[in-house]
Image (spheres, helix red, strand yellow):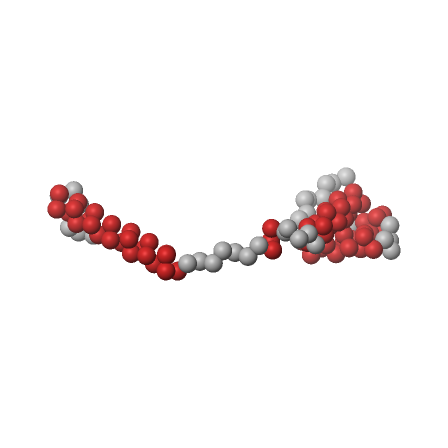
Length: 103
């Protein structure tokens, strides 16, 4: 008996199979034959879907927090500050003979 190569299922496929299992219209064995997946795998996906559903409806969901706004003025100020420092250091090193005039 030859072994089947490892398969990677998409999230869409997993959710489709798990939803069918949750509906309960067919047994796990019937779903396993229909989707060519082991019944234990279907049970695992069903349990994961049920656990994930709790997070969707929770009020303190991490994904519900908005991303912090990017302060462009602060970033431009920092860029200017670093550019000024680089220019100063380049000039000082060139005068000291540690940096060649070529770039």
